[in-house]
Length: 167
Image 1 (cartoon, rainbow, N blue to C red):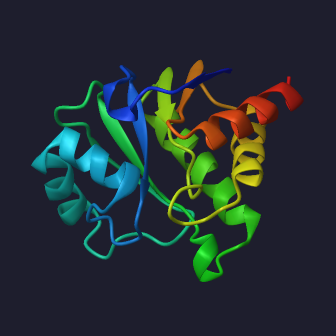
Image 2: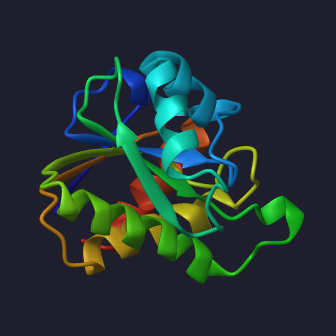
């Protein structure tokens, strides 16, 4: 799988599927989650309410169609909240593994991703980047191109180091 680093807004990058860093309730929110819901439109929330009325636990993933986004699907992963004490790296690994599992179910070849949990959830940038890149590189998947959309310079730098270390 080719890993591409971009500073583009994830809601503007054409892909087969977009990964959303979601709150466990799956009802939209701030940051990447809010941006994806705003750009995708109300169908995302309607599908989430119908498909996942109780939300999802941390580390799990669900999906919706993409509404007005430049993709076919949105894969919603519930990242661990480091600030709130959810610091088990396996929870973050699980987000990416489950995202790839769903991507493979839908035949996704081009996947756009954020730095799950590295924003408001406070996961340290380099650790988040190392886990993300290592997990994508070491997990068997049909995804051919994974584009990390990293608008914050600290995340772009961290993912650049992680990608170089995993080559």
